Image (cartoon, rainbow, N blue to C red; front, side):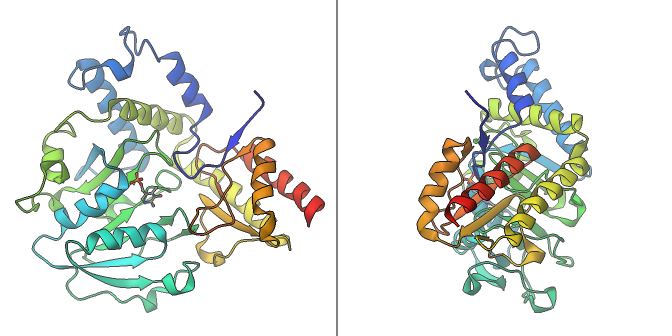
Amino acid sequence: MSRVYNFSAGPAALPAEVMRRAQAEFRDCNGTGMSAMEMSHRSKAFIAIAEQAEADLRELLVIPANYKVLFLQGGATMQFGAIPLNLLRGKNTADYFRTGAWSEKAVKEAQRFCAVNLAVDTQAGNYTDIPDASEWKFSKDAAYVHYTPNETIHGVEFHDVPEAGDIPLVADMSSNILSRPIEVSKFGVIYAGAQKNIGPAGLCVVIIRDDLLGYMPEGYPSLLDYTAHAKAGSMLNTPPTYAWYFAGLVFQWLKDEGGIAAMEARNIQKSRKLYDFIDASDFYSNPVAKHCRSRMNVPFTLAKPELDKLFVEEADKAGLKNLEGHRSVGGMRASIYNAMPEAGVDALIAFMQEFEKRHG
Ligand SMILES: *Cc1c(COP(=O)(O)O)cnc(C)c1O
């Protein structure tokens, strides 16, 4: 099989080195004679894997000691509901930034539990820009402020952390966690489904400041209660053990590659190359305002949309996989997470040049 570059938005490509290591350890993990997927989550062998993964994630993101790290299930979507349940703390309003398809979903779910004030709303402009902070409209008594630092579908990314004062800031980092350094102390909660930049689907990481624990109201499933998960070390029930193990391998790979600062440098380089090429071309375009373009997900359209299907087909034949845009947006989208090597972006650009020559 010839070289394939997978531009899927998620589940997404994983680092080749990590895949090879997982393969080597598949049936005998750490000399136990067992696969990580065959271990009891309460066994010494698995607890060691779980603790190492948490320690490595803490090191990579420099997570302060007053934050708990939870390894949960239900994806980011379950957190859309768990966040209001755990964080409203007797209040009935939360502020949300609606800047793309994922925050739109987060808003809808939160509205089942509280009044949502849209402090920022870019829906009318098809989610292609983020207004200046002077135009944000926070409410007076919000329990928390929620935003989506990277909109995976619309390709919009915040390059600065919003200033929310004393109100806990909650971030759905599903598609840009570990792609750039962050100052964890600016956040009340960070959560991220694993299948973009952490590992396989089935795992969701939640990082929560410990003073926000203890407020879950009665009458809801305990699996939605962050406090119960924190007390049980994320082992209230059987956690997604293999995904947890695999995430640990990715964290070790990130450390070996020079950590998050090194990743950010690569991600800047990869995304800049692709945007520069698109901007220099009359055939391809990206609709997002330059100051908030995503380093992770690059949507683009063709001057002749009737060629979209052909583009995706020919790219696929050339080994460039999963370039079709999200069905809600159309066009194309290249997701270039940490695991995408710069050579993959180079191959994409070369293909785009050649396609334009033939069809432009
Ligand atoms: C993919 C994604 C989600 C949804 O994740 P699930 O694991 O399918 O629930 C939510 N938010 C963002 C930003 C995403 O990229």
